Image (cartoon, rainbow, N blue to C red; front, side, top):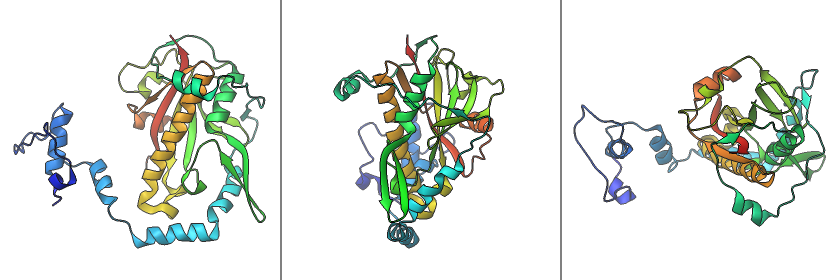
Length: 292
């Protein structure tokens, strides 16, 4: 049994109750106390507590990847994952120049949930995707291996996160779901069938009807578990935070606003993307629009 008091989980508002017939209700404070007391199960707490323990194989795998430079070999082959055919939409290469200085962008960045109905031109759309999720000009050369880098950091350079876009009001694009392909700077249509975008998010606080597009971050476990083992999810969530913040800053620099959203309908989104929900998971979302 964990000594939670010594772990520092108690505070003056912690409430414990031994009523096992009602171990959860709408008050998160009460649910939290039941998790601390061990009456209610929390996968999140399981994960955090298990960070105290790593398998020997995890460290062996990390050392193996580092010593053999296997990640760079995987990186070099990633271009083969992209689909280039008559359906692929190659985005404009000439990205718009980002004029505001960095300090101005950081100061102006804020979340917005209400948007005006205004079409997003494809050049601005291309620029947002390029600098948020795309390849940078920096390359790493190891002998005859050339590894590309992106505009965000990734544990071991494995890039286990893929980007899906729901286009709602973007010039020249049919409404629907697309996968962003960073090597060719393109998007590939995944599902252009009529769907209820309001079902993507929980509640009605997001102005889905007037947003220009939204982003779904997909984590594929097999892409980094072989190296990082039980540290994989933690690394990937940190990575997604960096990607999402990139997106926030780029949107702000081009006079658009974004809103990171944790309250999304995971099952609904994965159904439309035909993800298995076992190896491949949508773990975060973000939206972009012109602020109301």
